[in-house]
Length: 338
View 1 (cartoon, helix red, strand yellow):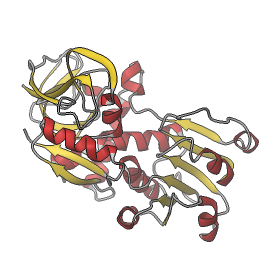
View 2 (view 1 turned 90 degrees about the vertical axis):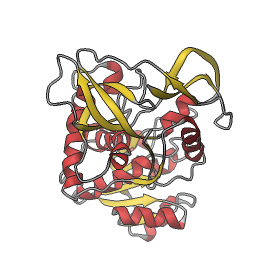
View 3 (view 1 turned 135 degrees about the vertical axis):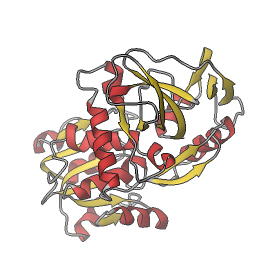
View 4 (view 1 turned 180 degrees about the vertical axis):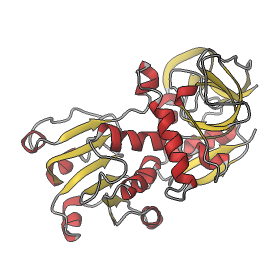
């Protein structure tokens, strides 16, 4: 099968950073689906795993943590799927990734793809959607239906991949959503997704919130820079508020007042925790994806793909990584077809 892989961890401008290779087609284990991958998307985790380091892989390592495609075969413990089913998933960071024509994925992590969108749109959803859903509705104490009613939510990094779906999920749950963005096109994007207000994260946040009538917010998602916004979020979060984090801090955080004084809940989300540690509830990820597919098909959520490169090959994946590392992408970038 065709695949894109690495053996050395190099800057993305190096043509050897991602390579076109041929690998054997895998055989499904007991809980696996064998999926013919038809579309993928890229996330910051792809670039972080690929980032330069001295390590050398003895065998080609396939990256990729978002995919949509068609079920080809499955293991004996799998139920609920048939050959030919269209599926989407983010998979397991500890297994070979989705940048290959065929991939094995634990069926419990997989959902049937939305019927109303194409596979490139479906491939753009899983990792960011699972991250936003788990953070808002499972790590933080809010119900996915009306859990935000009467509450305000600040989303730092609203135009990114996770922010683009978090805005929609939060609006649907009843929150008053305040997103941050700094360019005209990202401001328009956040508003189009349902943000009630958009403020500039390059400028002090508290005065902008106050100008909108928010001296405090009930909850915040920091999807950009944990350290940079740590102190200001401690200031603007209400007593008994909640903050959700997804980016590992670049330096030590001051875990104390005002967080302690206000009894603010601090919630970490790592989408790969369930598959990595084989938690008893890892099938929850498949259930979330099934629920989101139904919401997409009902018109209650929309896809977040803004661009597609084709075909899936090393040159286009290097370009996708390059754009993601620029920090200027909006929504999600997908690749489709071999």
